[in-house]
Image 1: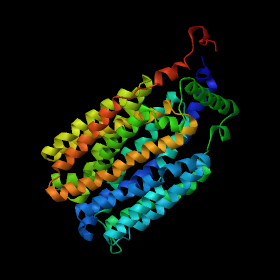
Image 2: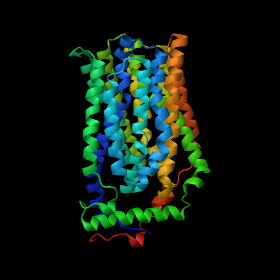
Image 3: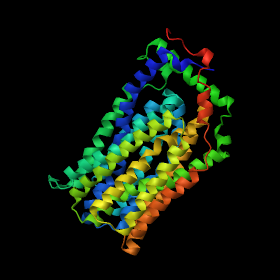
Image 4: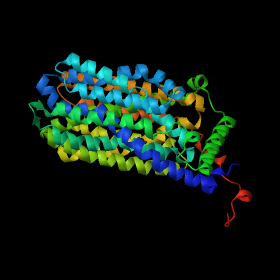
Length: 444
C-alpha cells in the first residue's frame, strides 16, 4: 500500500499547488465562458437592431460548436504533445481578438463567420484544462480541483449578466451597447493569454516554485496513482473507445451539454418573454440562478471527493435539474420561473465536476488527451444541435413551451445514460489507504 499522500511534503505540495494554479485557471475559464455566451445577452438588443429571427440567432449561436468540435481532438493531442501552457495562451489571444471583432457584425452571414471563427479559436481549451488538472492533482483532490475552475462557468453567468445590465442600455460614441459588450469582454482574454505564458508551468517536475521535497512528493504520488490504474485495468485510447464506460459517458455528456448550453444561450430570451422586462432587468434576473449554480457545484464536488463516489453524485443532480426545468413549460410568472431556474442551476451545475472525475479513473495518461477531447467534442455536438432546434421550435410554434420540454428531456436522458456507469474510484483510492500496521505514529 502507498502512503505518500500522508507525508507532510505531500500535504504542503497539495496546498501550494492549489493556491497557485486554481485561482488563475478559474479566471481563464471565467473569461472563456463569458466570451462564449455573451451573445445570449447581446441578442436581447442585437436581434431587433439587425432584424434577426429566432432561427437566425439560434443557428448563428450554434455554429460556434461546429468548428469547435472539428478541431477539438487534434488540438487536445497537440496541446498534450507540445505545451499546454503555450496552447492555452494561443487560444486565449485568438479568441479575444475574434470576440472584439464580433462587435462589428452587420448581417446574419457576418454573425455566422464570427461564430465559426470563435469556435475554431477556442477548440480544445476545455480538454487542455482537464489534462492540466490531472497532471497536478491526484484523484483524491480531482473533483474539487475541477469544481474550483468549473465554478467559473456559473460565475460567468453572474458576471456576464452584471456587465450586460450595465452595457446594454448605453450608446457610447454612437455605438450600441451590445457591440461594446463584445469589446469590453474580449480585451481581458488577450491580456491573460499573454500572462499565461509566464505564469503557468506545464508539469510538476518543471515547477521551480515548488520546494524540492514537495516537487518530488507530488511527482511520486501521481506516478504511483498511474501505476495503480494500470494494475486495475487502465485503458489506452483505442481500448477505451470500445469500453462501455466511455461510450456511456460520451452519450450522457451529449445530452447533458445539449441541455446546459442550450439553456445558457436561450435563458435570457425565455426570461424576457415570460417576464416582459427590459433587457437590463432580464440580465439582472439571470444573476440569481447563476449564484445557485456555484453553490451546488462546490457542495456536490466536496461530497463526491469526501465519499469517493462520483456516479450518483452525477446522476441524481442531473435528474433533479431536469425535473426542476420541466415546469417552466407551463408558463409561470416571473418569480416562479426564476425560482425554478435557480433550482435547475443548483442541480445541473452541481454534477459537472463529479462527471469529469469519472473518466480519469480508468484512462491512462497517454489516452487522456484524446479521450477527454472525444467526450467533450461529442458533447459539444449537442451544443450545436440544441440552440438551432430551439430557434426552429420557437419560430414554428410561436411559443417557448416545446423548447423548454426539449431542454428538460435532454437532461433527463443524460441521467438515464449515466446511471448505467460503473465507477472504479474506490478501488483506486484503496491503493493509497495505509494499512493499520503502516499508519503513521503520532510522533511522525
